[in-house]
Amino acid sequence: MGQSLADLLKLISSGDMEEAVLLSDEILSRSRSPDERDHLIEARVRMERALVGAIAIEEVGSELRWCVDRLNAICPGSALHGLALLNLAIWHSNNGEQMMAMAVHSDISVRSGHPTDIRSLSRLEIARILVGMSDLDPAMRHLWSARRGFIESGMAAEALVSSLEWLDIALDGVSEDAPSMERRIEEAAPREGPGNTWIPANPSDIIDVVEYLIPLLLADLSGLKRGDLGLIVDASEIIGKPEWISGMKSRISEIQDVSVTEALQS
Image (cartoon, rainbow, N blue to C red; front, side, top):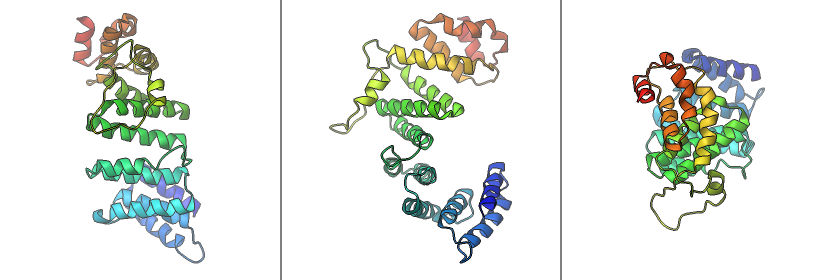
């Protein structure tokens, strides 16, 4: 049955949902049978079916919650349990239930034993919720934690995204006197009252992030919408690092985003 589950995940990944739903019916039936009873596979298949539209839309939330509870009983703190929590939290977010989503995300933690990659995905989602609430100080901390975890886990695409999202916020305010992100994370404490908070970024953190991004972004300068390159141009001006954009200037003919070329020529 393990091979059938692998085949199911491959079908879902390739977008063949009709075949995936048919195969999931078969696996689900087998996982509940006396001869092949498997609680773990049943929970995984039910989660995948909820995500691909194999059940009624009004049942998705309760089905994802069932999967979380079942996996918490079978394998708490595992990658699969963390994935189930992540899916439930995202479902809440997609339904405009941000506080419920935050509550579910809070169950994904080091203390619970969840792996770094799952925790990092959770922190990225929390940061996006906080950005939507204009609560930028904790959003920056979560983005930084996510970025660090993605780099540790070798998740290059996710590390790139979290770096860019952090930089986009950080450039709104920069101060030599601002604490580093590591210090902000270490000293983070619950707020005494309601309200949003904002702390400027330290230039050293911006330098670390930009110098991580430059070789990745300059590998391909094409694309009509390159806000990522625009962030590097902005950072170069704010931090006073003209060398950051020298590579783009020497290859300006490759850049298709007019706003970036205009910024480089100004």
